Image (cartoon, rainbow, N blue to C red; front, side):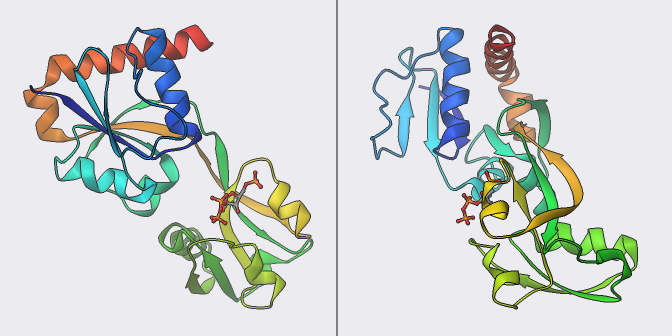
Length: 211
Ligand code: PRP
C-alpha cells in the first residue's frame, strides 16, 4: 500500500491537525492521547502518521522519509530546509521575542549575551541591528538564563506570557509571529501530487469549519 506519510510532533498541534482531518472524515480511530505508538494509520488506510520530535519534522520531510510535515515556523526559521511550505495552518500561534528584565536597554548595548533555543534566528536578528552577541544555545527552561546571570536576554517563544511573568521577565522586542505550517517534500509533490493536494484540501476544509 502506498501511504501518504505525514510527520508531526505529538501534542497540541498534532491534536488540532487530527481534529481538522476528522472534519473531512479522515479518522484515526486507533489513536488515543495515552497511546505511545509512533506510527498510526487512518481508518481508510491512506495516511501513515509518524510522530517525531518537532525539530526533526523538516529533516524527515527534506530527505523523503515523510511526504508531508506539520511544524512550527520557528523550527523552519532556525533550520531552513529544502522543502515546499504550502499552508499556514494558523494553529500553534505564538511570538518569537527578545525577553529579559524590564527596562533592559537592548538597542543601546554594544554587546549582548543571548540564551536561546534559536541561536541562528537570534544572531541574524542582532547582526542586522549591528549588536555583537555571544549565543548560548539551550534546549529548555530558557527563562532561567537571565535569572541566574548567565545571559543578558533570551530569544524564545512566548505564547501566553505566563512563563515570563512568573519569572519577572518581559517581552523587550518582538521578532516574528509564528504558527504551524504544512511542508512538503519536493520529489513527493511531483510523484504524489493528487494525494498531497487531497491532504491539503482536507486540512483546509477543517480550517474552514473551525473559522
Ligand atoms: C516554551 C517556551 C517558553 C514557554 C512559553 O517552553 O520555551 O518557555 O513555552 O509559553 P507561555 O508564554 O505560554 O508561558 P516549553 O513549554 O516548550 O518548555 P521548555 O522550557 O522545555 O522549552
